[in-house]
Length: 307
Image 1 (cartoon, rainbow, N blue to C red):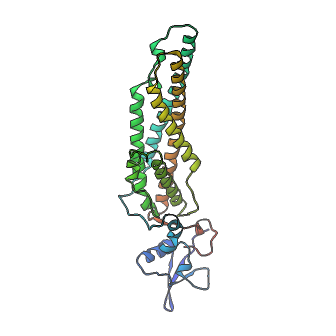
Image 2 (image 1 turned 90 degrees about the horizontal axis):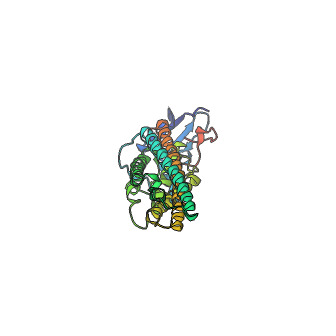
């Protein structure tokens, strides 16, 4: 259904017709206040602007203020298109997931070697300790590269948020970087930052619908797999592999680290594409930040008086 036009009552005269964007521009300029009378083209009676859902900043921000208690966050930089960066990062994360598959393979090979040693065969150094994911130090370098690219993309996505939605951003873009390195916070803060970016990007893509929520099953699955994969990889590097029993334990750690890394890489790629696509669609739909509100109104063709 097409968006309805509005008229602003100035004395005995009507000014218009205006679309929702035109009304919001007048609000930003201070030309429309809560008591200003507005009439929609298909209505005979005028109503106060405060009764038009999603128009005034105070009404638009109220759902989010009840959660965060703040006004809209300041802008930290220009909007940056994420399409190329996001898809490139997703490809890197998919390759990183493939490294996890190598870890699974070498973990199984180590376990089989341990079984042959227990059966009386001599222990072979190459089969006993093939290095993390079979490529040793290069696996660690791959983790640093993928992690660095992910943090760069995450910082950019955080900077983009105030350009997409007029809502308070609880975590400044600096948290997209610092949260990973601060002791006692890096097991919680990065997940909270990514969750907020995912939620606000989804709300912006939905034209400010505050009932939209982050994809928590995806986020929690990714973060759990990432944490366990990292911890198990470190455990594998520290384990001794000089005895058959030690080799079996190392093989299990290697297998599990590869499995969790494979899952974390695939889910991270999915998450990156989800946030990237939501931000790109939101920016293409409304170059100005959309107000946060609970009713999509004219976008879904359901509300009777929504600007």
